[in-house]
Length: 427
Image 1 (cartoon, helix red, strand yellow):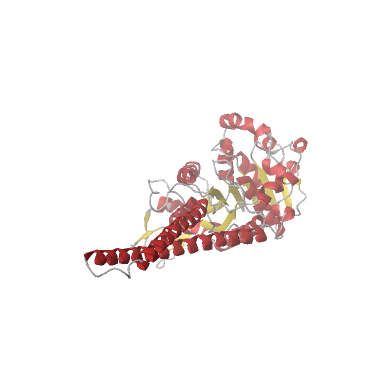
Image 2 (cartoon, helix red, strand yellow; image 1 turned 45 degrees about the horizontal axis):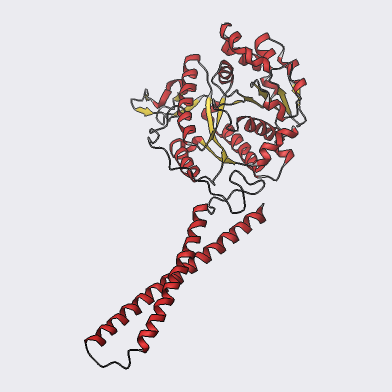
């Protein structure tokens, strides 16, 4: 199976996913080829290839027709080979655009070694270029890493539409295997809302696995090894292990993907092929009924909301910097925000002020009550009693409010300290 990691937006964890997915599949006993189509060569660096060792690369295979079997090299990861990327890929755009059938160059080359590998993982460049078109034409399925940001949601719709046009116009059989949520940071309040939108519209097309922000994933490429070798106990390694399981499950279970079939008519047994199911159109079966074919790619069932999500507010654990993320422990879904911290401090302040007012009223109450016993009954004494009752009520209200606010403020500060202590222990 050939898998392409696609997204025309950079910085979404596409290369990290390609490298660790390929390494994870290889660790399960499969022989895997990693194809680096990015001119920066990031995937090649991530598996220990030095800059001076990048050539010959995928550029020589696609542009000059070099033998792919002689260009592929082994990596330090058992079962994982790589076809490196290099800066020569930057000049591939113009040459492939002028070449006849330039969009199928990669497919022809990979077909020569396809039977040698259980999986071929392609790391595409972060742009909708002819190299990415080559990858989509060659691939059986593609995975889209996507961040839980509002602009990423809008870009995702356009990307899927563009891939659908490529598939239709160029006759590619590539399918969407799934959307992968990457760089998930639940300290941002907008994250939860955006993930809810993505899962609500794309449903089962979204992988269950979520790759959270983790410093070990950023450090591993500098050591030239996948995260499984650099930090096997980190949350990043655990997330990609789960992704490998999902990819294997989907590739084995999804009969419609493997056999190019979406479904069968319960009456005639006729299979609905993908060519008959563009954009979820209605298809009339020979049995006389009209079947609605499931939507596989293209726009979501309903348009995305017009309004932007609420202002993103970072929830920062006390004692940590705003951009800091967990290294080995999972990021808590609910954490204390700076607004909560200030709110509890204000409760303590107002509680102290109300307590001072209550003490003043208590002093006046005692003074007035002490001087009231010697007066004769009359209008003046009745007025004094009324004032005494009013002050007594005010005293009760201020005392209750002050005690309540002081208790909530102090208890809230204690919970913040306990939360901070728990976070430091987990890290």
